[in-house]
Amino acid sequence: MAYDTPKDYIQHHLTNLTYGKVPAGTPVCDSSANLTGEVYQAPTWILATCYDELEAMGFWAFHVDSLGWAGFLGTLFILVFWAVGRRAHAGVPAGFLNFIEVVVEFIEGIVKGAFHGSSKLIAPLALTIFCWVFMMNSMKLIPVDFLPGTAHWLGLEYFKVVPVVDPNVTMSMALCVLLLIIGFSIKSKGVLGFIAELTMHPFSSKNILLKILLIPVNLVLELASLLAKPLSLGLRLFGNMFAGELVFILAAALMGVWQIAVAWPWAVFHILVVTLQAFVFMMLTVVYLSLASEKH
Amino acid sequence: MNMNATLLGQAIWFLAFVYFCMKFVWPPIIKALEERRQKIAEGLNAADRAERDLELAQQKASENMVEAKAKAAEIIEQANRRAGQILEEAKAQARVEGERLVARAQGEIEQEINQAREQLRKEVSALALAGAEKVLGAEVNRDAHKQLLEQLAAEL
Image 1 (cartoon, chains in turn purple, red):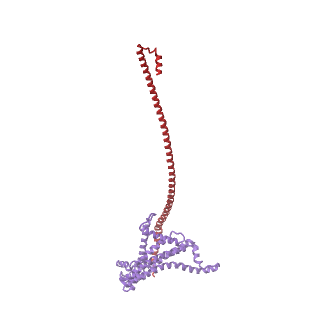
Image 2: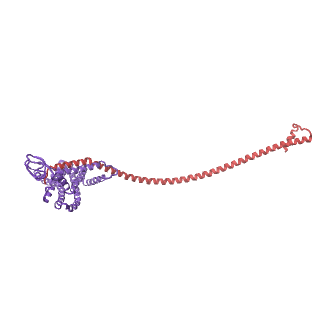
Image 3: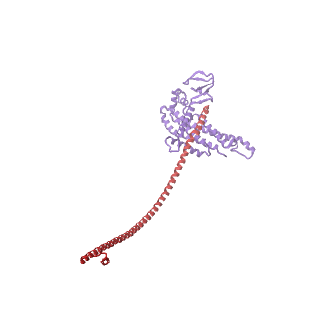
């Protein structure tokens, strides 16, 4: 593997397996991340094997590992809950159905407590976010080199296992939540009501002229508060998970096999963090949507 | 941070999973939970009702018991009374029957006495006639002395 110093090791472990479009003139690397001296003659879709290729990629690049693990874990969640929930019945529950019901009732209780209104979307949304984010967070409890090592053995240069350590993943979910916030706002207040909310608060005046003058001020303030929601939501999850993962990688980089002395207690502590961050993301989503669907 | 099209990919995952969860995962589970809640509520209601019913039934049973006891006592008394009555009747009947039998026996005895007496009378008259014939040495004409003979028989 291509790392001689702890810095290289860390940087390598924080690099995603990326499939993207490189422009013409990008240097070509072989599968061991060495430059071959050639350059791409035309824009090409490639699986990056070195930093030169990675840096050349623009917006059109996909983190295959993040998307793969996120999709795998989400599908696992949906399939398990679907397969077990399909057989849910009003009789005496047993086995795994008990667990599923406990989770569902927990979410239902929280949504009933925090969301004032009726929506068919909000509870399943909360359940999906909680379980999915919990599973994605939990991936970091697997020792840092197990899966990347396996991937490397299979010939993949970069492999980042924890999807939530990728800001694209957390910000993407946060932006979806932003869309839902806007959607819920418009649904409850109408388009004009939503625009009024952005422009007529918090400063308001009886004087029409003053009111018009205050619109830009209000708009800036309200837009900032609206955009702060997804930004804080996505960055909180990313930041927490990134910091936690970095400690694991640092322990692995500096201590080799003795990392267990640090990684094990850190992992135990992170069982709490993993659950808490999943809960916080879910809870804030519910609260934001509840605020959005309130009528003034 | 390098933000790229992963954003779009993840958004598609997100929306797809939320949609699937909303469409196929959440409804059956929540429906089952709701049904079970209702079933349990019904069960508890039924238990309450059963308890009340049991209490009522016990009350009714004890009432029935008292009534049955009273009735039984009445029936026993009636039976006793009837038994006494039957006994009295039987006694009376027996007395009447006995009297009747005695009367009949007496009648029969009297009849037999009369018969014997009649027989005796006939024999005596025959004897007397025979004695008279012997004494007179001649045959007595029965028809001629019929009146005399009858008189004799009546006197006997």
